[in-house]
Length: 305
Ligand code: AMP
Ligand code: MG
Ligand code: MG
Image 1 (cartoon, protein in one colour):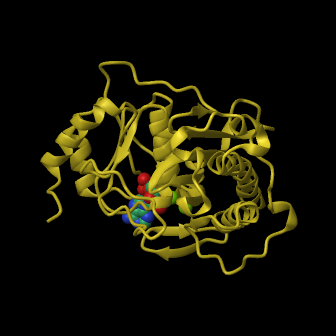
Image 2 (cartoon, helix red, strand yellow):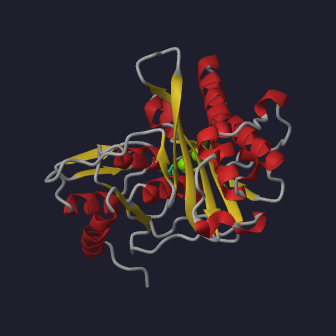
């Protein structure tokens, strides 16, 4: 019954509703035309879309789950949000799922919610709107196990109805998309388009891929893995943060893929963990393929001493 769903399931179900609302806010900012761009550092932008979406998601989740740690990408100066930005609905389908046993008794102190309110900000400012996602990752005892990926500008053909939400819970399934894989015999790699380095390019070249998809956002790149458009996401260099990978990692693992650092280690998503993914990202649509890509990367990138 909905009321008695375990806390972890209730947080995932509420995150879906919050991500949908944040998606509407991100579209509204774009439609108004004033993005309010701030440069947070080298090649690291923030817009009114990032700020407002984060306020909406944090206010919505913390209102319902006040004891849960939520870590968002943006430093916002105000916690004030319009009343209609506080969403307290939940996804009914997810609420009814059977919660995997390991998470049934998870308490507020076991859970950390990692929020990237707008992933692919550079692409948002440049008009590559299908690269933009909103990411809410739910970690239980250090591991990324629940994920929500909202794509605010996704169009299924009906321009009046933009946006879609994908979710995954490790051990319980995925929703909002049809899982697929690249046909056997083809090797398609996805990597960054706005943070390319010689090391990243060398690793991609070492795979000798049939095709390379340089797209924005960690969320969008994992989406390409989920829908059978790429076999692997390679970014063997620092740059992404825990909020970029928590939700994508959980959805990918829920459908049988694998996301780790470039040495094959899982990142911790505990509340006191460093936020930087200092050892890069390697994700494959099929967990069995992961070892092959690790081997190739190790021939290009020297292990950290
Ligand atoms: P990208 O693959 O370049 O679109 O990056 C995926 C996510 O990681 C986005 O949120 C980027 O802002 C972030 N990111 C990746 N590399 C860097 C970097 N060198 N500096 C700042 N942010 C980065
Ligand atoms: Mg991001
Ligand atoms: Mg972001």
